[in-house]
Length: 72
Image (tube, rainbow, N blue to C red; front, side, top):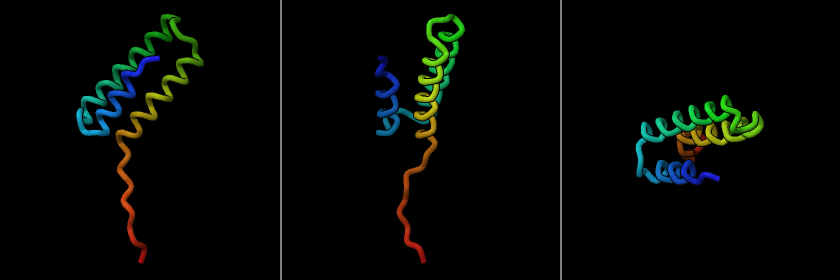
């Protein structure tokens, strides 16, 4: 299992890398994943699982922190 995506995600959350750097990494990972599928290195089920993990990380990049507020 490759822990690099989790490490980079933590660096992004901690502000150690920029949104652009993290986005470039996500795009590179998606490209590699597609290549692995086309070459037969992974099964379609593995592709779906890994794709979903990458997309979850990308979604977190765009999510804004919850700000509690008072209702009037």
